[in-house]
Image 1 (tube, one colour):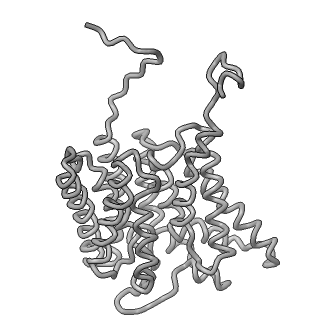
Image 2 (cartoon, rainbow, N blue to C red):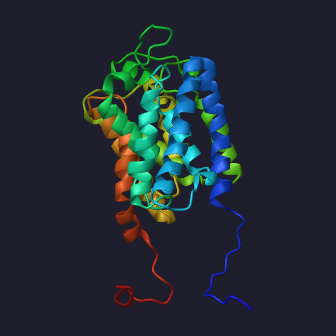
Image 3 (cartoon, rainbow, N blue to C red):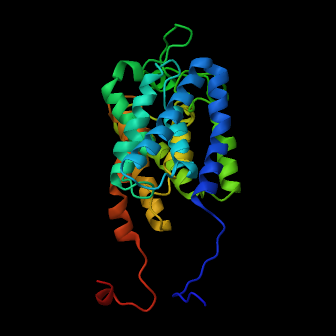
Length: 312
């Protein structure tokens, strides 16, 4: 017996489990650097975040009598990305609450993997930023508080670009080392888990509008230190590689991906330059996630041989 179906016929060995394991591997350099740079509390935050996500998904599915899907590693990825976005000295129970919110509220209540309307980890991070603002913005290291590089740039001061590239800066656990993020990006690109399209367009659009808004706002032409600093800090690289490329919450068409990347790049620049906060990556991406259905509607290519009237 043969299963006859309509073309095209595509054979692919990819699976959710394989893709998620690849993402986990790609996250290892940046999270490992975060633990080395910030200390053991960062490791505790990562463990708390991952365990919270995995246990929340398993318990929810057992309660509603659905197949347990924790072995596809999607909950692990959510926990790792949530931990990537956490301050290194935050109390362990903060990411634990975030993990429950990410899995139960944003993922499972919408139907589980593939049906959530926004990136669960970023949605949880924004929830935590609103609920525990002081804890989520405390980037003290060894008891010494210091401004994040983005706040320093916003104040008109210069930053050490080499330190920012290597990761010798304050910030969230997994966003500080651009070098470590790039190692993960190269792995994902080599494994064809992501394409360069969304990260490249997102980063370039952000820098373009940061430049435009500074000039239009009367601040003059930004210095090279300012522009490169915007690239190397604030989670822009991590967001572009690990979050904006999420399969479920980003468009599937090439044209849609470009529109999506331009939109979130524009929003990131708006939040960074015109907003009261120096950061904007998380909010920009989840707003973009909500608009993805509309983007896909206008970017789906017309079927070959079909007229506009027939398409409607």
